[in-house]
Length: 358
Image (cartoon, rainbow, N blue to C red):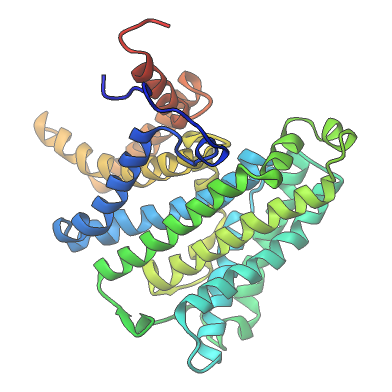
């Protein structure tokens, strides 16, 4: 009964084009952001920040960038981990080689470098698509892994390829505690999510979706496939590069190329597929599913073993966790191939119509 649109009239173009046209949605989002910004830091301990909340925010940002490319433009990519690595190492080089470089500037410049690399490896999308494009982007993953392992300049002449940062600050404010790092990631995620939502509703977003649905028909009606595909790669790589820089600077603190391996690329692709292709909200659902479920299974399986009187060792827990995790992914894809975001949309529609059946 509370989720109704009675009396909510759209009397102007501006009111009709709002991101959240329903008043309850706007209020709910504002309350959620306020709760995350002001209440969560007071209630959550250090473990929750480091193990769940900060990884969730950063991976949500990376999934958001990948969803623009895969979900909205229909260009399959298996090189997301490579673009994250480019963002992380580029931001590191700007941060340590330029005296007094602000942290936010380093993060954004890392995203710019990831944009350049993403556009270069997005050029094959002009001639190939589908699995062939996936293999082409996979080449970016192998090339970047090799570069950061073999070219010592990228790692500031580190023999092992690992780098580290410390004493972070933004506008003179220290960013060292888990709560401060969480708030930094939250602010960046909210800004990028708002920008991405507006972008996909603009003319360029509609061009991406036209290319995704049928690129030949899109070209016939005047959409330039070259421009649309390369801008999708550029925007996606920029967001993913900033997420990679945050992953290295804020979450890890010290990292090596293995932190952005091909496993990370598949993990982000699973987030987008499970959360929902072509959905901003789906990026958050997919990240929450991927981050929280393994931790829950890792805690629940030993407890279940103790309840039935069976001791489950660490190796068994790890293998069982992978099997259950894979089975749940397959289950969700069969039950709702459009992702968790579609389930959320269906629930909202039922709330708007309740108690009527249609």
